[in-house]
Image (cartoon, rainbow, N blue to C red):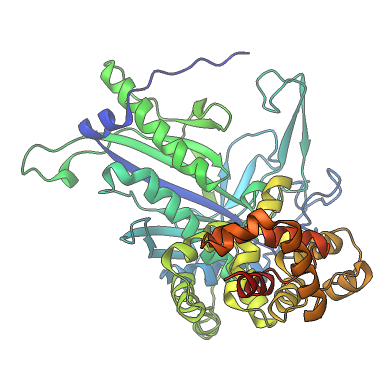
Length: 508
């Protein structure tokens, strides 16, 4: 089966003539030990269909029981999003067929969510703030996962057959639904990315999910519509909303931004042609940067919601809600500003740290004794480069914050230079031991004997008279070549700054 390429118009052209409106639905898998309504484990990556039971497989006569920890996590998310918490709510059955949904309905919440009417202020790239109004955050269960075998893309198009893994079926989900996001104009894709990023940071800070988008534990469904622009002096909010499309399961911040950008351009082209937008779900393709049609999008009535008869209502006590409110951590945005001030980072340096996802790692490294400057240099420089080359997350790279603090300390104390410290890092990553053990075993230590350093300097000067004459003539940059020769003479174990000082003292 082949996919066709939809017509699009230029983004600036689309924004000049239409007003984009977004709605973002973010699904967060909770990190509870067991599923939402049964005792099956929630471990990621297990052999297919090994973490299942009669309840999550929807077998006749199996009765669900609500996971208390999941309810408490939902309340904490709602509180962190400035939501009101329902003093009474219940589950509902959302009826539809999908191959990886074993019960042919999803246990979710409909008109009575656990949390509602909140907001999250998000900071954009230029430092301005956009308030995202939250309509609801409700509890539900995840579906299974379809595995499409054969074909080149791993998608259903072109596959020879499909398999279903029900391990994920029943894992607790919190779906966070925004109200229509208006007024963003040309910055709509940026606003969407900033919101999902801020939400990810917030949920991670709460400790209720690992929010690993690449593993599907946080996914975004992006709704987009276009409406005509109000005339001069007209009220844009009075203009009716356009028909929306929903791009499903977008799983990276960059893709959220790109998918909304693309849909704005595609919608504009459809409207320019005189056709109508089809209300549908669409699939995002990372490789082509485009969406393709999925299925017509149902409205709520089509799901035939009705109250779940096998579960009692959830009625959290006011005392519990207040206890959970008191347990909330410092908001991520406030924490970032505090840490930036404590560490003395510039705005650009802090942005690099945030983009590298290294805030927690740097905080722990500093707590282990490193300087803030040294911790930043390692995590956003050498380690970020290596992790990126190997396609790994920094926290999964195989080196601890204590290791980096030790490396920073050895450089600061004058035992190692940067080149030697990188050699030690190689040894740590190769499993040779902790930094001090690796340095000892490899014999890595700067020459501390000034006499040995001076002898090397004299030898290099004597052997490079032409370069030495340039330094004597005031061309101090030429000293770099002599320093390199001294480093070579002492097998890289000289203090370059001390060698430079000694060379200049002898020649100027």
